[in-house]
Length: 356
Ligand SMILES: *Cc1c(COP(=O)(O)O)cnc(C)c1O
Image (cartoon, rainbow, N blue to C red):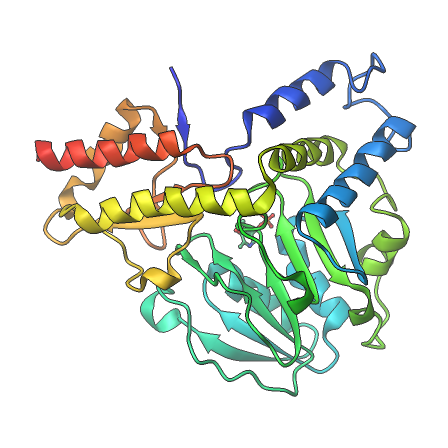
């Protein structure tokens, strides 16, 4: 029976990606070898890497002057690589969640860090507004989608300084104006590929300004010059990522994806707001994530949480347990999630209300 996969990450991928990757594990590009056992320097794999880089540039309309690279170490290694490469004296960070605060913590190894804005006072349930961004910082770091708390900075912000964004959980979900950013990074396992690869888009002229020596593997320039093949890349993850990029293109690209994502999020939030048994801890609709929908039992119904999880399980709805720091539920509705699965969850909520 069909499973409805709401896991936060690793998470749902398009059927196309799974199918093509499974085929390549058996016979990659007509070589009669598995993608698991072929040299990353073979012409067949080099073509995969080149096409993946080209498609990221095409789909996100990456302007001249930027480089696209695939790295390892997850988004978490970027928490340290970003300041290693960009922080000369002082950096500013938005503290809007667990991942944002982890990024901030790592930057402190490299210089002064200012918490430019924070939503910690309300358990990260909003995006700070009217932030005044200092002009004497080397860069401002934001987390565009707070995967755990279900908030999102949906509009590209205008910063008077270099802008760095962790887009791990919303890259490719909506059009972005790359020219407003100097560096974007995203662990692939939310919206692109299996775990093991991290996408980085960097403005070349942002690099090489700190005067600090950087170990070879942690220097973005190493991977730019090596075309993401300075050392052995995670071939399977890159291959799968390419399939997702091809699927995105085939399905109308990022604008079409955004239309679907808005419809899916609206369907679910409307039900949370309507249903007396559930409530969304993020009060301002503008701040609500279109990728990770967090909701909890409404006051008076708290003791029914386990019962709703059991009902969901019965209906093959998987992965909606909330993160321990928020509790309740979290439905991750990434690009590959069909609206039909969101409708199954919404119907479960309606039935649950009628039954209790
Ligand atoms: C999942 C996630 C991370 C951590 O990614 P890893 O690849 O596991 O290091 C960082 N930031 C955000 C926003 C995430 O959603």
